[in-house]
Length: 76
Image 1: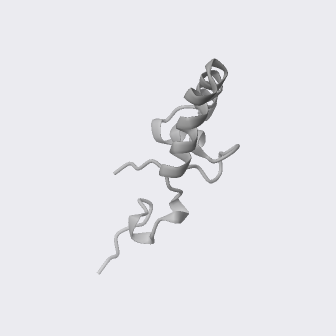
Image 2: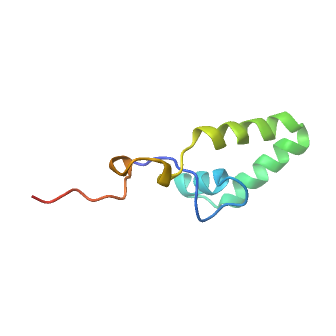
């Protein structure tokens, strides 16, 4: 199952745009431009969603190992 995480490698501020880019298979720059345009249009429409996503989207290291999708099943 594909899960959304904040990026730990491709981040400028909180890793939100990097994580969105990895999840959707798009360049994170597109998400960064979107947040900047929304912020220039009016500060709240760009900054507030970014902060909310920063709080809600976990990093892979913040989750216990059993929730990590990269782990392989134990062989018996």
